[in-house]
Image 1: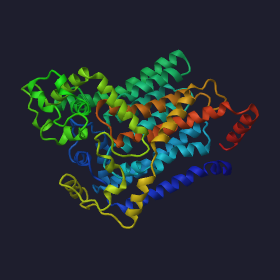
Image 2: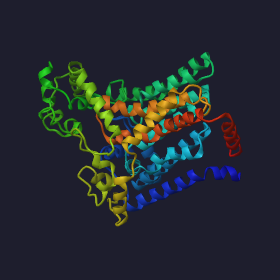
Image 3: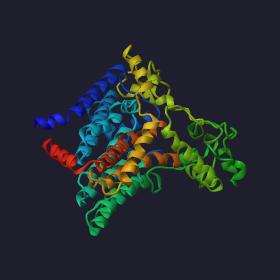
Image 4: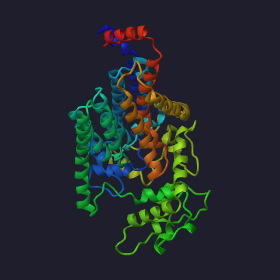
Length: 471
């Protein structure tokens, strides 16, 4: 046992430091952060019903936590634990697939120490639960070299449940099915595991869609018109569109090149969505979706250009505001030092424990400084992407055998979950968090494959004997 414990020492140290850091966050910023969609999620504790704006899977976690206490600090503590569990799953999966302890530990550092991950764990938002569920699906599929029917069934259920936490998870099943077609041992197994995965994915999704239909008369998980409309506000030129008269109010009044954050037009601008008055038989969501589709059809290259521009922001050296976006402040501790609740968040604090947010000085000030420097810089994200891709195209490596399909799955999900919001909603730094969880997995596996090709047979055999001794 001693060699086994010794081989895991770097990760145990990193995990302990990550746990201590989370304790400091909880002490410095009691009871938790409530902002953005937080008050809407907390309403699910009292009344669970499908929302037109987002699926309510995250409300299940909030409801379960509320059985112990309604105090919002319990949500933050639970999510800090889930963050640590996420790191454990990453490490265990990589070690299982032959990655060295040092590289596997390095792959967990973004989850353990990145500022935005810590802020989201401390916030009443769905991201931490969603990322863990997707990762668990990847781990179940990739635990063995070849996926089995049972693992495909479990992973499909996890991916389907994740889509009920965040609707952006719907396309995950496509990459997972491709993984099964690539990684299963025989042609029959490839087809069977892919079909089983899709069926078990559809079970929770179809059940929720039926519930949604019963409540709202539409077969869906949520309404998507508002999000797609917000995507178009960055580029739409209404002089190039043929629009029904009632949709004209959706045209942003600011000139091109001076547009504000898409969230402003979608939720706050009194002259756009709030002034929309569609005729009988046309819902607000349908009108916004129709406007967005007209804009995309009229300006397809502008649409793709803006989506590509926003994807490129992922690789920015700093998490700052670009191109009219103005929400970067939300994802660092600086915003929450001496934070004062608003008319939107104050009632949520009052009804969930009653404790208003406070900052413990000087610890809160230290964490504010921590947030300015400790995060995964964009060039490092790019380096991880390139490492994963290089490992993916490496032919017949001498190390990391059988991992190519898992490199594909983890990397495709990481980048896909970032790209989908760029195509269907808007850019926000919060939507980059799946990269912190999944991309290091692909990069660690890719690095192992690349390093394996450069090892001579002698050292490679000695390394394998050492790995077997170390467990």
